[in-house]
Image (cartoon, rainbow, N blue to C red; front, top):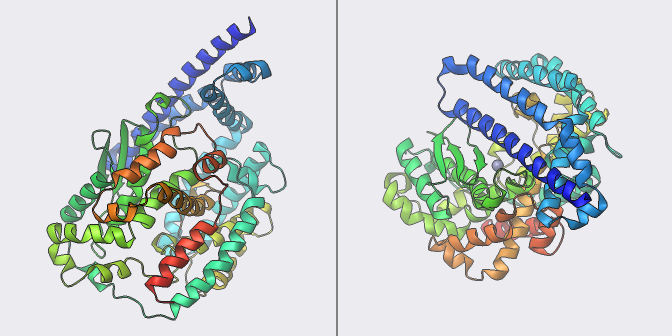
Length: 505
Ligand code: ZN
């Protein structure tokens, strides 16, 4: 009898979540359209459509029936009888449900209204290079995020509640020592590289049409195994990947006039996200398991293709004949060695998104320390520019002169996303640990990459990571794939080996 009831509860819960997934997928497609295709005069009706769908989705996400089905399915005896997949579904629905019901409607509305207005203020503040313009909005956003953390609940640090939203289980107890260790090991590496001559990168500004760049990116995406029957590549001001199911994954890219190499790496980055989405077991489509398990794991897939593969010597060997064929003028007089050095230039800089792979994580350490202090209340929002300058100086030895090149550079805070930045570093760390493991079973990987045979690596990633979607939580997945928990040493070793050779340290 009890088991029969649970079977009904499971079927009803899955039906409910499949409908909710359809709503989210439709919203995703409308957002993709807004960024890529929508004519400007469509903005007003689009924002109304999005508001209607969000309200519907929110109502479904906190439906009391869902709570009833969950309690039934969380019964000990029922749990023991469920399959691994069904137990994971119950776990993930519980996570989403708790988050939806714990946040009072008034707080959700306040956050959405405040961040809509804050976005405009942030744009204005950047234009006028004045933190003062953004300050009142940011104060409100920090306060609302503190309330959000309180509503969600936490142990020890208030910031833990926000970290957990983007990376299940992530806490300051993990991140404090991890970031301290990264700081200790990266700073001497950056300092050693600074003593060496810089490579010549002027050829990146040579003329290369958008069509040439795009055709090359298309070819590279095909080479890594992105399925154009199950995805697209379109233009947008900012590269991104949005996927609603393995059969429909949308990538965007942009093509710069002052650096034709940039599009290559953003295509590989978004392509890495896209392969993850396309590689998820199609039986999970429409269920709560049908997506990447966390932002950190997702970013590990993009960074793996962008940096560990894309900026490797072997990949450059594969690229050179493609350049000769598709954009010969841009590469005239540049050999593989010069290109490899130019795409791996290391230099402390102010802007995170333009940072190289050695200094990048120091930008994240800074944001982590500041966010944590803001949310815990030990740093006043007014004091942010000063704290930013001091932190930047301590971490990278440079001090920004303007607000636009310091605390106004990222959109995350204007969006209300506190707790997000750390996942970028987790992605870098996971990528090195995963690739190290992959190399154990792919001993010819470098030769394969040189010849443009990238399928063995993609298949390895699909078999060990992509196919599982959200079946395993990030820690469990990492343990299953690599045999140990997240270990930053793999990333440190990767950087030290690569840059010691490259800069003759
Ligand atoms: Zn990414």
